[in-house]
Length: 88
Image 1 (cartoon, helix red, strand yellow):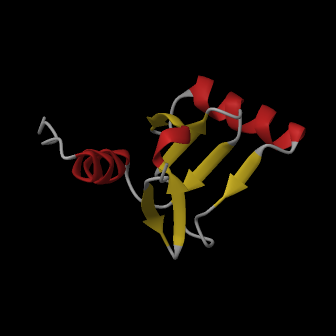
Image 2 (cartoon, one colour):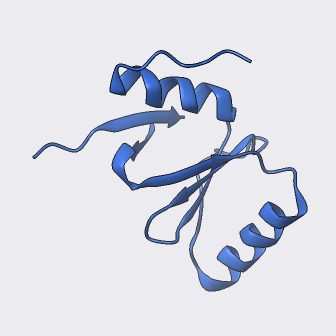
């Protein structure tokens, strides 16, 4: 059994099968989730000091902050699975 990986920027890679959601960090519930994750030690910052553009929610409860947009990540996930991503 092999684990599929996706590049999320700045030499960081995440296992596809562990990603539950890819969300934008702007809404109040997501900001609250990020604060709770930080207080519990479950927040992982993968932005290398840049602005957070997407938040990955993992099946383990970890929250990963990334500096590339949700659409880009969704496209990479779809491409790795051989699915054509829908354009808005």
